[in-house]
Image (tube, rainbow, N blue to C red; front, side, top):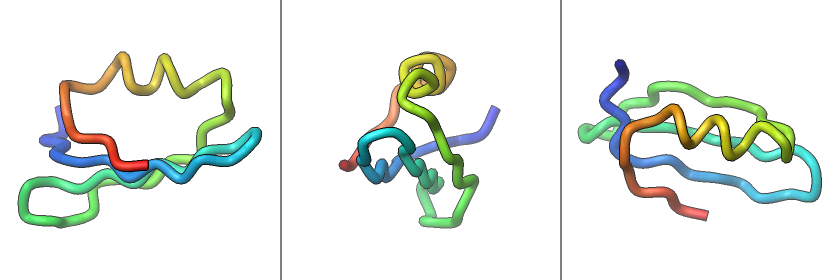
Length: 52
């Protein structure tokens, strides 16, 4: 599993952008999420800081 430390979440009406980084600030992934996918996405990740 990725060592996600923080996720930045860009809020919009229908499509959200999630950008994850590790403790050193290195990019781990960027995801486009539809409104219905957001809860399942965060449920599958370990606890981390989410910035909106």
